[in-house]
Amino acid sequence: MTDDNIKTAPTQDNQKSGLHKLFPILAGRFRRRGWVDYAFLVAFIILLIVTASMSDVFFTQRNLSNLMRQTVTNGLLSLGMLIVILTGGIDLSVGPIVALTGIMVAGFSKQGMPLLPAIFICLGVGAAVGAVNGFFIARFKLQPFIVTLATLGAIRGLVYVYSDIPITPDDPTFRTVLGAGMVGPFPVSALIMLACYPLVWFFLNRMRSGRAIVAIGGNEEAVRLAGINVTWNIFLAYMLSGLFSALAGVILATRLGISQPSVGSGFELDAIAACVIGGAILGGGGGSTFGTLAGVAALGMIDNLLNLFNVQSYYQQILKGVIILVAVLARRQQR
Image (cartoon, rainbow, N blue to C red; front, top):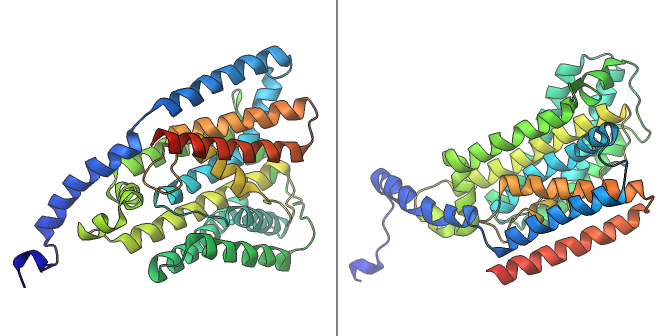
């Protein structure tokens, strides 16, 4: 046996050297731009122009505030979905987590629990569900689609076990503090969502675990050989997705002032669409935090415009499906 056939465990120095060599190569895919990105930018600008010309109501203060509130749920879900997609995975359980945490926070409030501890409990529940997904995917190498599909069904059933009827809290602060709160012309919920994006950008680009998540989607085996704990970072990605889903569920419940067990159906489609429009590669290793935010904004504008013209919701779902297909095909041509 020659020395070339011997595989030795990487030392600490080799691990550090491997990190410095590995991250710039793989993270370069994460930051790279191409013609598709500019095409989507042009399309977004055209959408703004068309919207302004077709509706006198769209750019009013009231409608813009509603638009910002309506995009918060998908904005947070898409942020968590992006982190998972970067690893080469998918999370289909985001919608049921929204329903579970929303109905829990409403139930806690109705029972007299102060809003703040109720929110933290629900955030912990969402992170725990994400941790369960991450455990089975990272530890047992199961397919993310299968694991999160199983979680989708289990959590949806758990929601109806908790309550099969809508819950409306009696406390007026349940809605006014977070869901309907304003800071100047900006909704509090929208400011919370927008604050999350630079935090996630910093995590993915400047922190060791975030850069590892990006690198795993590019080449998982290379990351493992560099001495990075792949299992932990995949686990972390799904836990963060669950956390953002829980935050979305809490904010949605406080915005509506009521929580229904049926909420959240199809939310995963919107999140995936926003990520793909924003530049995420479904195979992993490529994506953009602020590109995802642009995708969220574009989908929000489309939904809002269609609502203003009383277009029925199932036509919106058809349009989103077409958008995902076109975006994936465009990204494939780019590569």
